[in-house]
Amino acid sequence: MGSGSLDLDRIPAHIACVMDGNGRWARARGLPRTEGHRVGEEALFDVVEGALEIGVGWLTVYAFSTENWRRPADEVRFLLDFNEDILLRRRDELHERGVRIRFIGRRDRRVPRRLLRRMDEAVELTRSNPKMTFTVAFNYGGRAEIVDAVRAIVASGRSASRITERTVARHLYDPEMPDPDLMIRTSGECRTSNFLLWELAYSELYFTDVAWPDFRREHLFEAIGAYQDRERRFGAVEEP
Ligand code: FPP
Image (cartoon, rainbow, N blue to C red; front, top):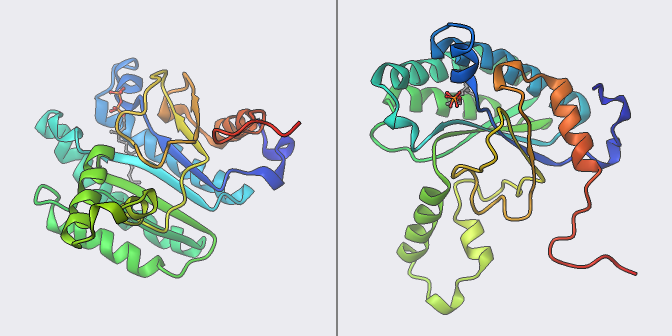
């Protein structure tokens, strides 16, 4: 599907993606799982281009979860190196396209210092870019994010009766990030898997059988088309 049939006045402001199915895509072709991640990079940057083309302001992708450390050591190593490598190879191009790069997730000791440095460099380089905010969820877990927010609130000494939803939202990893309007998960699994647990409360969820390595901007436009066909009420009822 092209972007032509979309209503450009109702493009979701924030789209979040669970880029699932890389391993299965590769296995189905007799390739190592890591090959699926490599092809997944092409999918990701086509989606970034598509999002820029239609004016999506915020795009967030799940690159590495707090549960992904449980994968075989060689795949974990590959994913760490791969993320660092992508940052090095792609940051200038993203910068030129006016994309602001941000990260959400735990900066704990398992994340190599060099990778943290690359992340900080990419954030610094692109911090004033106006076109789109591209957030990479790395060593991210939705429950961990809520736990970290609770810790920060307790550490601030705020009294329990003064804690509201706004307080929690302000202590999430990126308080400026708006809640996603649309969450896309590829490859047939219909779960959120600990992704943006707090932020997805009212998001439209879109699941597709297309594996992430095969996902392209046309599929993104298809998902947005489906989103535009839905009616969002945020718990209210439609006016008569
Ligand atoms: C899920 O497929 C995908 C991942 C765990 C990693 C995807 C990461 C990228 C495409 C790179 C992103 C990097 C940056 C810096 C933006 P899976 O392995 O869980 O697939 P399966 O469910 O078939 O096993």
